[in-house]
Image (spheres, rainbow, N blue to C red):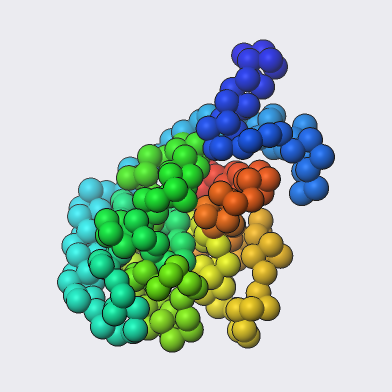
Length: 250
Ligand code: SF4
């Protein structure tokens, strides 16, 4: 493939992700010209063993059984006040043996209605990102910090996150992914175990570097809903995704 053909593919990819223009005066870590995505071929390669396909089938079914038992245990949960306004609990979905988990903040309106995570506009953007990373949506596992929709899509509050987080913690234990991509400020705040008020925590300052949750690398990045409003920052999330792919290869 010559340079022009390669550049065409890269541009088509960015168009699919929804970039409206090339940030030629971009002030982030790298310019378009030097952006890793231009020279590297990762966006167009598939990871050799996606979705934990190198892991045993019995292990997968065992994990599925554990996840089902956890969902049964949650039942018609009333452990926090978010139970009052929800239509459905959004437990999470995907491959029980996934190598990568994507963890957002809370269900929105569409997610609440469909009982599935990331199915609205932000979910479509996340799905495109997952596919461009070389996975199918069903290869990975997608969940949120809280499982019920906060009223008016407000941020989940401390007591709600404290009540619900143990369920996510157990999902992570069961799935045992190789890497987690946390989506948005609240997800990063919880998974990084930050002390202090969330109002002082900035996703912009922590994204792009790996942290750990119980020994699992966590890459904080922007929430897809934020990226829908701030398209110029999609480049940064793509850089974060490439770092995750590199971590998976290693
Ligand atoms: S958000 Fe979590 S803890 Fe609160 S009611 Fe829903 S499932 Fe239960």
